[in-house]
Image (cartoon, rainbow, N blue to C red):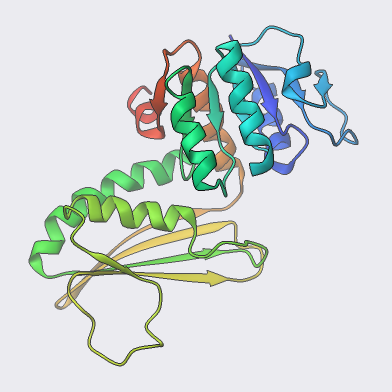
Length: 253
């Protein structure tokens, strides 16, 4: 049984993870951290991670960027592993993530979905086949109208997966409205759509002469990210210090 502290337990993702863990016999949330207390929880909830007074194996973090530094410092001092799901981290915070991984196990991913993380490998393999054959690579991502960043971190990670297979030779293009020219060969186009309540859709297009291959992932609810975080927590508990990612979680299943 993996014992978890849910950091950001009363946010939307925290509540979804709480529901998933309640139905999983291999994991239990023994405490939560959240300053918002209007949600009824079946476990104790503390204002900060420093106040937690119950034994646990791993932290799942779905909070906000402002809380990450304090969480990392706590995990370093208490030797507790952490599944870091909060996005929008500054370069300075990312540096802290790296330094913390020298002392404790840290798992961080641009997207916690098991499907998306499988898609990364598929894109690498497809790029190795299609790029040399003259196929163009385009990525289109769609999200709800409340999302602040564009393109999404996942779209950039997909582009990185493709470019990694190309020895980083391609450049990223985020829009072509400011230029009038034919599409360069060594380019990965990345387009963002924002509208309605689209949870998340990512499409990688390999367009060649007379044929198009599309690899697509659609999230119909945020539970896909929560499920990935839960599996990551089970995987990370008891691991030695280091930086881990969802590829290792998938390989371990």
